[in-house]
Length: 177
Length: 256
Image (cartoon, rainbow over all chains, first blue to last red; front, top):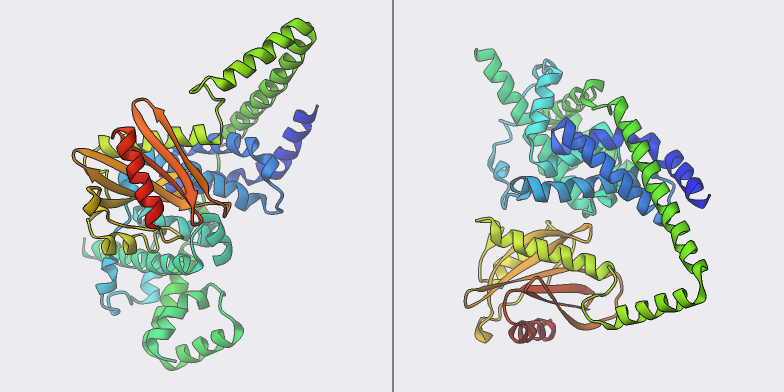
């Protein structure tokens, strides 16, 4: 009886966030099937630890578990993606190169944006997805990813620079062909 | 406001994360400076190009059903486990007594401890250690015997500063560092070398401030020693013999 109540409460609090869970897992893994498996696994984990959930924000709580599940999975399956580059090579880019005209950017189609975002290293991709698609605040992202606020801010800035550069390059290439 | 400062703050401005006064300063600067104005326009354009609904992956309908049925199954198996336990206790006093006796023996026989948090962690430590040695180039992310290179490398990658010390004079040479993932969190992994043996030392912040003594265990031929102190958890693992690994663990513990 108690179990059934727990299940009902759990489903009510956590199941509505399935969309957010899948979106995050899909962006992190870049694969439909893997994302589905990870989300299912994350829900089972979440159910096990549901006793420890007292907060009001079911989405952040679930997404933290989804992210952890993704990282564990990536460590086993795609450990090369997790190596963080030591230096930020983009520091060297002149600011002019990173300053294309906004109008030009507006002609970027969604496919192009999707590809550019998918090509970003995972640590930049995740903060951008959480910020732009989940519309989370810096503070929420920091607590979800267990990163200092400053790191979240710098990853967002660097991720955007890389994204902008990638889009500009794509569009230049398209203009030329 | 300088351009450099404005460029730093522009993301916070676009995201609406700045305090009002700061926000007004950036706004003022954008009005006066063409370069920063262009950065601002580009960032706004970039943001709006990310606002397409089609970039948001929606979960397939069947996934919800799949999750619900796996949750039901999980929930049912827990209920039946409990019912099963109760039936056992009602079988008879003698049987219950034997069961208790069994539990008592079970607990006193070393190596057959119930799976606890530490046991699960030991498994994670073991598999991370084995994996780090299996794949070429996987052992270290930063290869250096210099503690002043290894320690700053962790800066910005983990949210704590792991104590890094070289014990080359005691013949435990610092070999490098790596990011690990244990106990549902990123951890620092330091690699030490003695002769042909590698030692992985995993470090992450402890939840409790109190120190715990060193506990040595063996798993699949590997020696593991774990303890906590100075607000950190430590797990050392190696194929090195127990005596030398314990020597290493004491060096680390005293070196903090």
